[in-house]
Length: 258
Length: 369
Image 1 (cartoon, chains in turn yellow, orange):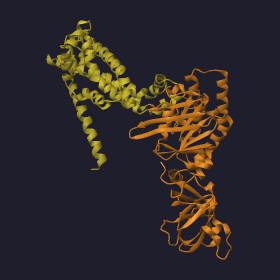
Image 2 (cartoon, chains in turn cyan, orange):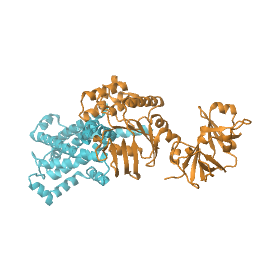
Image 3 (tube, chains in turn purple, brown):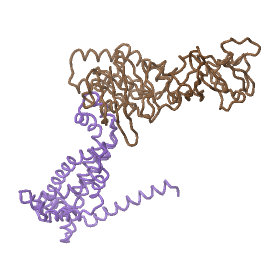
Image 4 (cartoon, rainbow over the protein chains, first blue to last red):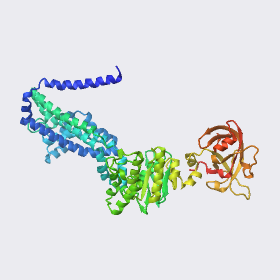
């Protein structure tokens, strides 16, 4: 078999593996209960909570990640490689470990000081946002750096020589040119935040109508052996995630300005 | 006058130390140098993209080395042009005016004249990716000139063009410069381009300005061996300065077992007896002597006999490698007009006699730092 055919077969096998997993869900799918479970107050709360926290955490990750990505893309500074490596930590570290680290932090003096000044994180809504932020911020920075790397710094150099400040050159030239890449990065991070479980459950727990986001709701439904509800929640979560990924593909298909 | 004084900067292991350069206003100043000589580094420091370790930049009587790029009044045209792909040609052209908040009727008028001179009026609503190579060059040039900068820096913008387009844009650059009178610093490693465009030429090699002057001076009278080698001079021979006889003027060089006496104007500087020098001989100035024909008295002291080692048809002239008898040297390159080559029926291995006019020599110091 030729190398190309072998690689096509490998791709097909991988696809089949994931397709089989999704199809296996259908064996326990109860269509009649779909709308009942979807529209139940606890499911709607979980969906709303997941979408809200994921949007907030993505907003924060992009807000902090974009300047960081710009610095890593454009500047050489002391300790750049160390910063770069630390930013990848969330990509290789277990989310549970990340959540545990956050939980332990809030038991230190600094953590307690933060909580005592009115921002409660442990077992609270902000905790979900923080857990998701901790999981996706590194990824967001990495993806946005890749998007910025594609835009030659000479555009900014020319813009500045023509009279733009560094800030104006970024917003008028680099940002619009990198926009699709940055938006793709945001959507991917948002999808990952919606599905985040390990760090969230460790820091925020599983309180119904308080911290029970979608992945936590799936875990709780499975733990109580409610398989039809588990399946429907998984399908909803998969639907949200796949829609986001498809949106990213659509962005890639549009003709580029470059 | 634009002055770069005592400029020092570093990038990795490469350094530029105590560089001085004066640019003339209203002309094409060429910064010529081989790849890796520090041209782009110097350019980036002038624009303000790279901090100086030391030095002063004076433009229009004002020190600008501490100003950010947007306050310097220096427009930059990089090698890849960097036209903004998400903006139309019109938006690219007036980017500088908008960035500087200039919307006066005078600016609009200047932009209109520029669009007319560059013949890009029909392209204004198009995006850069739909333009031909020449149209992109014209647009980038227009964008750089639209806000009437005090200096325009061009970093090898024509290096990727095919010869005919290159020639067209070079002509356009020259005519625009003559019409608008802008001051340009044009960086290139292309000798032909430097000679064509340059009113003044500065040769940068290994982070040092080796020579600066009018193009004829730089190309005909290189001051150092480094410049001569960079300019492609091949007939470079080591010699030694000898004392002049009483009552004589000029410079005496011991070379090829004889003493060649040259007028003072043929030496890059004053040399002391005993000093090691490099003698350059212009290959197109060497005469091949025809047997039986009388020889002018002035040529008699500078005649060499030897063999033709190789010949090569270079199209517009014939290249001949000549080796004098009894001399330990690689050979002397001679460029002969095609008709002379034909008339003399020169063949490889043939013994010939050549004569060198005094005016065809140029004496350069050896290993001068």
